Amino acid sequence: MVASEFDIKYVAHLARIALTPEEEQKLGTQLGHILGHIEKLKELDVSGVEPTAHAVPLMNVTRPDEVRPSLPHNEAMRNAPAQANGLFTVPRIVE
Amino acid sequence: MLTKRRLGAQGGSLILPFAIVLATFTTRAMLNQLTISELTARLAKREVTAREAVQACLDQIQRVDGRIRAFLSYDAADALAQADTADQALAGGATHAEKPLLGVPIAIKDVIAVQGQPLNCASKILGKFVSPYDATAIEKLKAAGAVVFGRLNMDEFAMGSSTENSAFQVTCNPWDTARIPGGSSGGSAAAVAADECIASLGSDTGGSVRQPAALCGCVGLKPTYGRVSRFGLVAYASSLDQIGCFAKDTRDAATVLGAIAGHDSRDSTSVPQPVPNYAALTGDIKGLKLGLPKEYLVGGLDPEVKQAIEAAVQQLAKLGAEIVDVSLPHTDYAVATYYIIATAEASANLARFDGIRYGARVDGADPTELYCRTRGAGFGAEVKRRIILGTYVLSSGYYDAYYLRAQKVRTLIRQDFLQAFEQVDALVTPTTPTAAFKIGEKADDPLQMYLADIFTISCNLVGNCGISVPCGFTQSPKLPIGLQVLGKPFGEETILRIAHAYEQSTPWHLKRPAL
Image 1: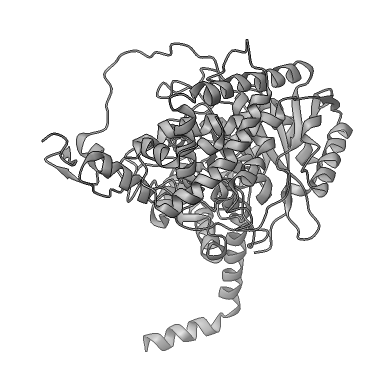
Image 2: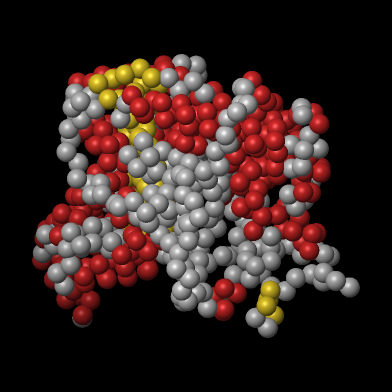
């Protein structure tokens, strides 16, 4: 993959971000430069190298399954941009 | 009549009130400049009150923050009320042995939740968000008696190295207000350097505590991944993020770390390791082996920075440390690795900002349109850049070529550090390749901005701890330079010991900008 194949419109849609044509132009160019730098990693032979997902190897972290106080409903709704009857309102999803 | 009598009484004792006013002013003007150790000693002797200390910080904000712009907001009444609570506790016999931060004003980066206070991550997308709960680090600060106040400016969602990516304001470097304070925790560093608070919290994903600390001339500590709970820290890159602190000296940073460190069942990545007494600093580093990574002293390193680091290394040798040359051969690949891993994780983490459950919303005919419009309007350029890059490196067909490869290179970088730490107790490096650059200088060239993170970024990829301490100044203009000490995982005691010993034998941390 080379930077020129980078389709800013397609990826911005995957990321659910609306861009203006000016933003598409500017971000597309800048991301091309950044991807150009990232190509550097291809210089390295990584065959047989295990990937690192996390610096600290903690496995299967669990805690006791106990009932504890949680955020009251009205507190959880407090920052909602639109609500009705204690529910978040959203655009119609099904006809 | 009453007025006249008052005037008469005042006139009769003109000198005395003037002297009192002057004394009060002097005490207050100084209280905000104190270290935690100095302030708590005076609070314990009841020479000063927490209210006076908080008021001194508020006065300093009034005086200088119009120029520095470190604070996005602060709630003065709430801070003074917390101070009164601390004063009552002190009057009731509470001690700093039990509550090490009792009465100490500490300000918070706008990415950590404080109950009842705004939380914006310096972004428009969070709208008028108010935190419904305290982050664990905040709970712990409060339990230690701290007066938690203020929302400090930052790069939006902690993405940036200059604090220019804030949606609200540009923070200026207290040493030269035409220059950036560093980032992403630029507000946290500038506020401490400008004596607007005694200490502050920030977060460090690729250097966001150490780099601004270096550029503003204060101490910045990034603890080991897992040392401090991230519950209540808004996530940027979850395998790299860690809460850290800014302070006026190393002992203070140790005190704050001691208060916020520890296991938390609400953060599954926090590590169940006991918390030692970090503030027990001996000043002795005889026999410690310090590694000097050869890859960090070449390339784009500014000659004045290089000189300051070499002088600092000599000083450490004079104090009895043994200096060993080491190599971190994959250093050159760290920035590329970071910008794949961090952006990939960011693209997933920031999916939550969709305009449905909290924050700002731009309506649309269907949910997809609502998401796209909300995120298009709510995120700034750098955040969009990183989310799009992260989405791309995780997308079908490119995952192996970018994300998986970066994770493998992360392993190679980690092995470099493991091998180096077989030979040495800590690494000593510059924190940044140059001193603070000018506002706007790199704003249109994100790649150049990223490349300047070269010395701080590996520490997050590896999960180690690091600290930056002041180690000198450039000549003209006079700008601070930072010395970075990197430790093993959970090696905070060692790096604090080294930084403290260095600090005790040098004057740099005592220097203050003229404001």
